[in-house]
Length: 294
Ligand code: PMP
Image (cartoon, rainbow, N blue to C red; front, side):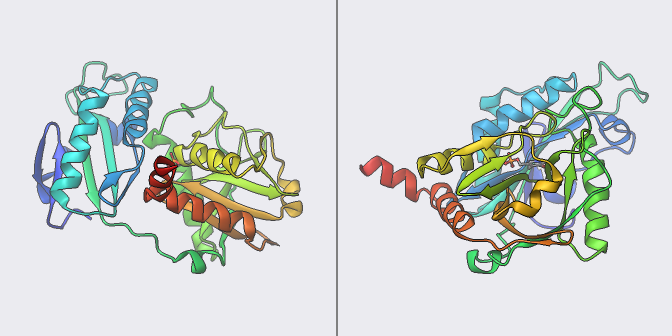
């Protein structure tokens, strides 16, 4: 990924992609004092940019460090790198980490660095192909309790269990892992939130030990606009067999139907179709301009 043309915004300026490097004795690398974001560019603009920049700042605060840029400066830097890269549909990855002045668990005064990269990462499947649904395997790793890890931060350290879970699932022929939480309740996938349709209503776990995703909140709003009732509650794994439809939401995943969880199979249907279409219209501005015209 490091050997390509283009530019990356790094500590206040755009530099060549290949030069965006850190030292091996970086605190963020050894002790995971690192937070990041994932954003999508649709038709040349970043969807919910300020919400993502705010979450980046907040994620760092939870880990005890402050970004040397304001939310407005991060927004501007993001727009600058998107423009420099010249993509109209792309993915954006801001990342912030403690630097390399002190090497040890404590590094209170290390400088904080910020980089923002942008690359093309299209949806892999057309809506029709995605309607087949992806396969999830329940992970042996649990999402930790909020007093075990900073679960309300998009902290790099939390992704260790996600990568292990996703690799295990992939090695067994699944696309992704379903993670249960520290209580054994359904939590989320390794990079996306979880929804279940049951009797015409949508059910989704309360995000008390994982990210309350920006896409999650967007899809809840879209469902409500359609008059669909959304219930946030504890979901037990043995309820999954009753689900009419299951799907995931996330910036990268958008709305992705699930066709299988372990030995259970599901058929993506009307609920998935409606929300995939509504989400697509919203991010591409069709709904916004239709609403403005009303
Ligand atoms: N959970 C995890 C673990 C994630 O990595 C993501 C992606 N950021 C999400 C949920 C969904 O969040 P969002 O909709 O804000 O992208």
